[in-house]
Length: 255
Ligand SMILES: C[S@@+](CC[C@H](N)C(=O)[O-])C[C@H]1O[C@@H](n2cnc3c(N)ncnc32)[C@H](O)[C@@H]1O
Figure (cartoon, rainbow, N blue to C red):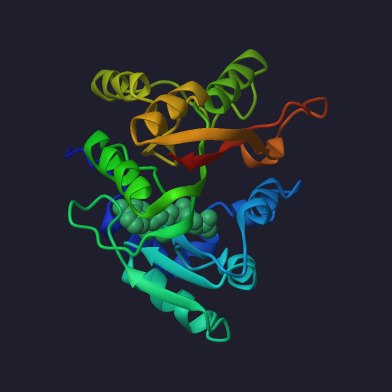
């Protein structure tokens, strides 16, 4: 049988676009403590420009549009942008741009703020390196990056809890063919953990510090975007409440 490996490239995101609402986790709705919105409020101004890098179908545009002078909504997927453009016609300060943030010839105007929420997910190190490089390039000196990414600590905590208390046993079936198990082990060593069978980059907090520093971005604040256990398990035990699973949110400043 031929092995099918799915990568989070342009084709993947174009294919997901029509069913985006059902397929993709909604960070805006699940950030119950409004941690990301507070970070946006800290750096927003009616005189500033913001880039929403990997905006998808534009869920954050109603938050960003009233807080900034101009919003550039950038995504690799044309279909996502078509959906966003149609839905947010009334947001007149939004410009839509199809752009590959992992491309070597990216041309985006320099912005005061870049917001990038769960978009640097590819398992390709080369593409991630370019993505981070470009995030820094399209920021003005002294500008701010608000970055949200999956947490590797949270992913591992979920597996430890699942295994220790036998939660959702059928869904976490660990018996894999040898070749697949070896591949997944190798992936984990790179922080590429599976979400719905797609290797997805997860980050350690200290890893983020290192790789943002390399791009001239200094971390000013880091916070957990904490979710309910229902986002990880179908049947979480009654007693399992805190700590919940989380994504990392980083607020960084360009030197
Ligand atoms: C999980 S969605 C997150 C969307 C949005 N930021 C949100 O929070 O609702 C990831 C988005 O990143 C986009 N993306 C992935 N790689 C990209 C790249 N290299 N350049 C631009 N956009 C990219 C995808 O097309 C997808 O729309």
